Structure formats: C-alpha cells, structure tokens
Image (cartoon, rainbow, N blue to C red; front, side):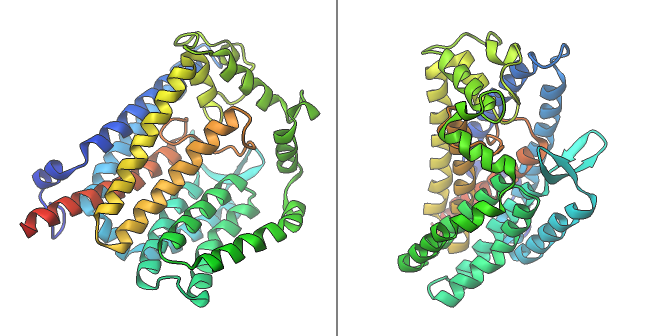
Amino acid sequence: MLPGKYSWSEIRGSMDKTMLALILVIFAIGLFSIYSAEAGLRKNVSGFALRQSAWGAVSIAAYFGVLSVGYDKFLSASYWIYAASLVVLLALEVAGTSSHGAQGWFRFGSVNFQPAEFCKVAIILLLARLCSRHPPETIVKLLSALALSGVSAAIVMKQPDLGSALVFSAIIFAVIIVAGAPYKYIGAIVAAGFAAMPFLWGMLKQYQKMRLVVFLDPYVDPQGAGYNVIQSRIAVGSGGMWGKGFMHGTQGRLHFLPEPHTDFIFSVFAEEFGFIGGVIVIALFAMLFWRILRAGMRTKEMSAKLICVGVSAWLWFQVMESIAMSMGLAPITGLPMPLFSYGGSSLLMEFVALALVQSIAVSQVRDKIQQV
C-alpha cells in the first residue's frame, strides 16, 4: 500500500508508463555504450558494464521503493533530508577520497559514492517545500531561499567540484523563477554574478582555468589540457552520418579517447552510431523531459510542480553539458550523462528523482479519478 493513499494495483494503473519506458530504454542504450567503451580499456570487458547493471537493479528497486512511499512523505522530511546532505558533504573533508582533483567521494571497498548526487535531490525537495510555502516574491524571501540552498553549492565548490556547483545553480534558478521570483531580482543576481567573474576566476584551481582556456582553443595545449577535447571531437566527427557500428569505434578502443565510459560516453556512442544515433538519443531525452514537465503542468500542487521543474533542470543541464562537452561546445566539467554514463551513485539518485516525478503523476491521475 502507498501509505494512506493507493494500493499497488492503483499505482500500476496510474503510472506514466511512457516515462518509465523512456528511462529504461536510455539506461539500456547507455549500458551497451559502457560495454563498448570498456572494450578499449581492458581485456575483460564485463567489469564496468556488470557493475552498472548491478547499480541499475538497485536503482530500479529504489525507484519503486520511493514510488511506494510517495513524494509527499519526502517533502515533509525535506528539511531533515537537506540537513543530512550537508552533514555528509562536510564529512568529505575528513573521510572523503580524491579523484580528478576533487575530494568528492566516499570509498567503501570497490564502491564509490558521491554525496553531491544525493544533495541534488535534497536541494530539489528543500526548495519545493520552501518556495511553495514562502514564494520568493520579495527580496528577503528570495535571498533566504538562495542563502539556504546556496550553502551546498559553496561546500562543493570548496572540494572543488565546479560541475556539481553548476548543476546546483541550474536547479536553484529554475525553481525560484517558476516559484515566482520577480525578473528584476533575477536580473540583478545575474548581473552581480557577471561582475564577480574576475574574483571567481581567482578562486579556480589551475586545472579548472586550463579547462576554460582550452574550451576556447584546445590547441593551446594539444598534448595536455586540450587533448581530451581534441580526441572527443575526432570521435564524434568520425562517426559520420550512420556511425562505424557497435564496438567498431576506434578512438575508444585504441585508447585515444580519455574516460570513455564516464565523461565522454556520448563520444563513444556518436562514433559508433553516427549523427542519426545521436539524434535518436537526444530525441529520447527530449521526450523524457516532456513527460517530466507534463507531470508538473498537470498537478495543482505548487510543491509538486517545483519538484518536476528541479528534476528537469538538473537532468537537462547535465545532458546538454555532456553532449556539448563531447563536441567541444562547452568546457569540460566531468559531469556524467544522466542514465547513460557509468556511475552508481549518480544513477541511483537519478532514479530516485524520477520516481518522485512518477509519484506526482500517479497522485494526479488518482486524484482526478476520485473526483469523478
């Protein structure tokens, strides 16, 4: 039973099955891409793909677990969830492990967990509850929402994890705009951000500065910071219209493409399935975003609408960044492609977030039926 609400038969009958199918199809395509990418990394081509399959099973179980509880229960505990996420982020300073220059992971044996992924869900729940009860229509309420949610962004910036901080910012701005923040205040905040860029530049690590420099011209350092961008462009471009075929891409298999199973998974896919394959994947994500926004537009509860907005902003930003990064159209941030790249903690939290949206869709359908 969904506590106090619906039976499992009612949940199954009211689910947005198109949304669920899109999630599973994108995950399956990503899994095959990880398998292909791994073929160029090691002789045993089952390790990453098998681990991602195991994380997929855990994520699907979590999906239905969240759905059985209902989004409203998570909303009611949103402050505690956000507080817990901050504690876990701060704990990284003591017990975290470093990877790619950022101290953003806990390591449990062979399993890594990135708390920033958990924090993305926590921020969405926090802002959905806070901004639905106290719409950011005045400067005091707006700054309160920004200050409270911005604590997490400040912590991950210190690690430093610029990619996660950018995702947090995308979520925060999308939610407060839909919640009713006046455009004059949004414009003032954006202007202040541009004015602060010289100071922010000084806060960046050297490798982060080089990522921005090689985004403008990767041939400034073709054998160093620009190498990843150059090789990724070659992979995407060499796929042509139809691609080279599954497991026939050369950039990944010959070790030219760095991090092919994580950061540059779209490059692997584009080389093997070409422009047509890339368009199909983008179309699948576009349909998924539409189903998420559709659930938000159909519900009457502002808190539920804001959850859908936050989830769509999060996933859209990472998809856009991952694809653009692969083609050299955006700086390298190390953000995984949602549901597609290898990564257990990111996959788990993406399924949890999408389960919250599915719960909103179920509640909307059941409430409409009960009103008839």
